[in-house]
Image 1 (cartoon, rainbow, N blue to C red):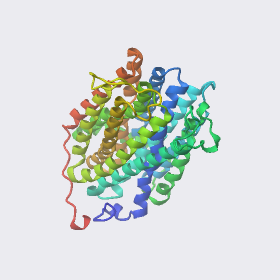
Image 2 (cartoon, rainbow, N blue to C red; image 1 turned 120 degrees about the horizontal axis):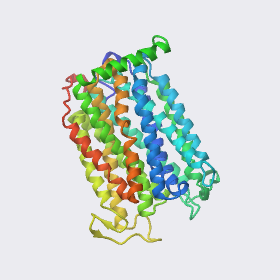
Image 3 (cartoon, one colour; image 1 turned 30 degrees about the vertical axis):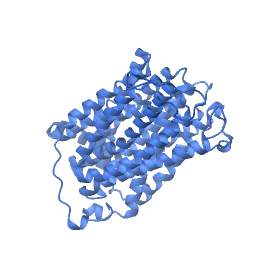
Image 4 (tube, one colour; image 1 turned 135 degrees about the vertical axis):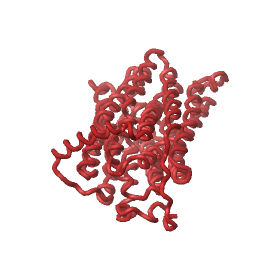
Length: 469
């Protein structure tokens, strides 16, 4: 297990409880992605708040892009400031509070309420950037917790725990909170918790407060148990030192050839993944007419495969190396994306006509729906390993003394074009008047990122001592 073995001086002082607290951070933030960005609030926004699914997909793309632009601009500077201060947990706490506040705002975005669309977008942006900024500082803790030969497993277990948390949170929402507008019952066949009204989307909107409470509960172990660096200097000095250090890092970046190529590749392929998750539920709602219940069940199935994939991917990372895991995951995403584009309500593989679903046929009753679900399961299986192995790869490439700063650049590379990706989906959707046309741009990101990553040279890691196995 990664909890034992030959540890570095910092890692040797990390208790199992401290490692557990770090892993639970992924659990804390997962409902922001699972409930808000993908499976509950985003489809509600597109189908209930916006005037049409096409407009909803476009607006959600612009909102996702705006959040990405803010993260791209500020994450490297914040990372440099944290490296200068020596502490990361105060930053994690502050940005977690921002994310929680954004989640709480979503409850007020009700149909027919003046300004509901703008309020939903503002809350979503706050929740997204808060969770992303907190993640920058949490990722940078990783090399001080376990030795290099165990980082892949630690990262993979974190992603697996996050996926499992997303699964549990989604199951709770669907089983007890979100009800069908047609029947007034949840997936468990009962009336929604606290009498939430499905006609006004109260169950869907409750995903925001639920995610906020969940975040608050599961962030506490990291803040209480996981060791942090020692603070030094004053805050004004941290700002000046951070700016100077970031400037020096950017100037020196071309000398770090492999880091620079990796960050460019990550910039491209993570952008595609963000857009794929952001629009997967929206695309299904528009293409197949799925409701929140059907999208939620799809999300549960996808999250199960994601949990398995992240755990297995962490082991493969330690055995094969993070680069191989990332390239293999990208190959699967390319094939799955082609499959999604080849699937409509009445056609699969571009040319095979199938009967569309009809009312009363049951869950995922049509061939096209089942193909889409299968593709989603494949995406879930590789998405976790892709992200977990990416942060492991950077942790192996980056200089230890500038780890948070490089993770700030890592967040930058994952966000600097993310405002372009969702916006391109939005623009292409509006221009083509087709959700399918908008989703087609994702292939460019996966293929381009994989091509660049092949040029990255990963240093040979130190051999593990006998006691580390």
